[in-house]
Length: 330
Ligand code: SF4
Image (tube, rainbow, N blue to C red; front, side, top):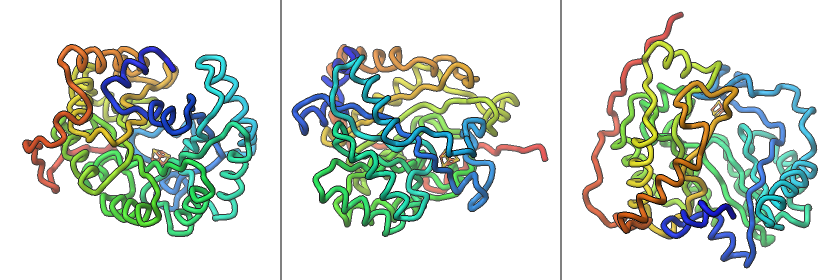
C-alpha cells in the first residue's frame, strides 16, 4: 500500500484497510474493461452521454479488449510490482457493467472469479441498470463466498442537477436500486461528484445526507473534471461552468468524510483524469496532493471520519433547488 494511503487510513476508513482486515493480506482493485457500452450513449436513453463523459474514450469495437482473465493477470502483475499484494478485487469499471443479458454477465464475472488471485468483484453501473436478475446473480456470487460490491453512479441526489448533466436517471432510480440490493444483502458503494454545475458544498453535503439516510456501505467521491470532447468542455470554454479550486475540493471532501459514519468505507476520496484529455482544473491530473491535503489537515486538526456524523446542523438545500441555467447553441 502506498505510504500516503496508509496515512489516509489513520483518519478515514479505506477500502484497502477493510480488505486487509477481511482477508488478512493486502488486496487491491484491478480495473476491468469488459467491453460494455452504456444506455446513455447507445441510443437507448440517449446518445450524447453524461455531460462530463468523454465520448472519445468510447471504443465501439469491443472485441479489441483483452479477455477479462488477461486483464486480471496484467493488473495483478502491476499491483504485485508496486505493492506486493497477491490478491485482487476485479473491478468492472468501464461504462455500464450490468448492461447485458444475465448469461453474458455471468460468463464475464466468472471469468474473473476463476482467476486464483481474485477474491471478489466490484461492479460499477448506473442505478437504472440493475434489474432484479442482475442483483440475483450478484447475490448468488456473494453466497459462494466472494466479496461483492455494487457500485452505483449517482453523482448528485438533486434531480435538477442530474437533468443538467444529462444523466438520464433521477434520485428515485438510485433509491429503488439500493433498496433491492439491500434486500439481497449486497453492499452498495455510491459515487458522488463534487463540483457539479450549479452545485456548491451544501449540495454535496445534502447529497451525502440523502445517501447516508437511505443506507450505504461504501462511498466514492471525486471532483468534476472537464475533459475534451464533452458538453461540459463547451460549458467551461463558454464560462458557463467554473471548476473548483483544489483547496475548495479538499475542504468539501473533509466535511463529507467527517459527516460519514466510520463503518462506511471510502473506496476513493478523489480522482484524476489523464493529461491528454484533461482541460480543467489542472490539479485534477494528480491525486497525491489532494490525498495529502486531506490527510495532513485531518491530522493537524485531530479530525477523524465520522466525528461529525451525529452533528445536527446539516445544510438544508431544497430538493427542487434550481441550478444555473445552461444554454445550448443548437
Ligand atoms: S452513465 Fe457512465 S458511461 Fe454512460 S454516459 Fe454517463 S458517465 Fe458515461
